[in-house]
Length: 210
Ligand SMILES: C[S@@+](CC[C@H](N)C(=O)[O-])C[C@H]1O[C@@H](n2cnc3c(N)ncnc32)[C@H](O)[C@@H]1O
Image (cartoon, rainbow, N blue to C red; front, side):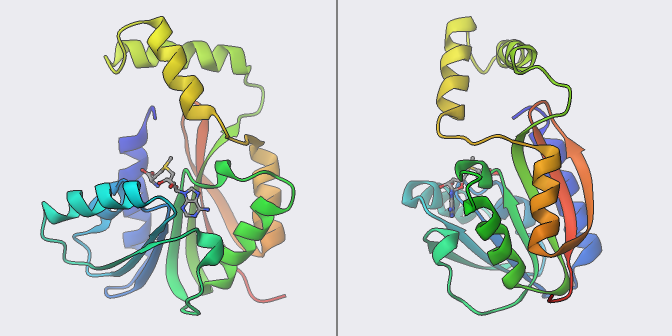
């Protein structure tokens, strides 16, 4: 993902600004371990959930190579099935919700995030999305060149295959639609803090119960 490292550092900075030491953090889509590795030196209680055992195993392998200061608990399940009533000081969902269709499923996911946060707590949401005035053809062409330029693939065919695999099963929403869903779920102070080539990051607060 072009710009992922910057996004990751910004996310940590936002959480540091908003969370107290020993706060409770839920990482949705924790598999692969990118967030866990980035947050592991904070003295937080981190719960990570991911539906993929393989992705969680990769996260565990990466964590075993460092000595985290955080207390980390990993759960293998879909977030939709998460049952702990615990209210968190912050939740992150980075590159997860684009797997869900906008037929009420995305909205229900966000309402569930709201339900697991304390009032005034922080939610960080990063999603693949359609940017205003952006042609998907132009973005695809830039993404192909990005993959080749960074050496992640050798040629155009490999880049197209990589992008096709990566976007299969993805439901892209307009950024305005995303913000509408955040508001409907009860979030307030919604602020976009990041924009990549085809994905955006927002931070927001859990508003009062309606
Ligand atoms: C594109 S990866 C992003 C992983 C990580 N958040 C990152 O930024 O590196 C998406 C992850 O979300 C997980 N995932 C997808 N849908 C999920 C759901 N409904 N509940 C929990 N995890 C989910 C996938 O298994 C995968 O590990």
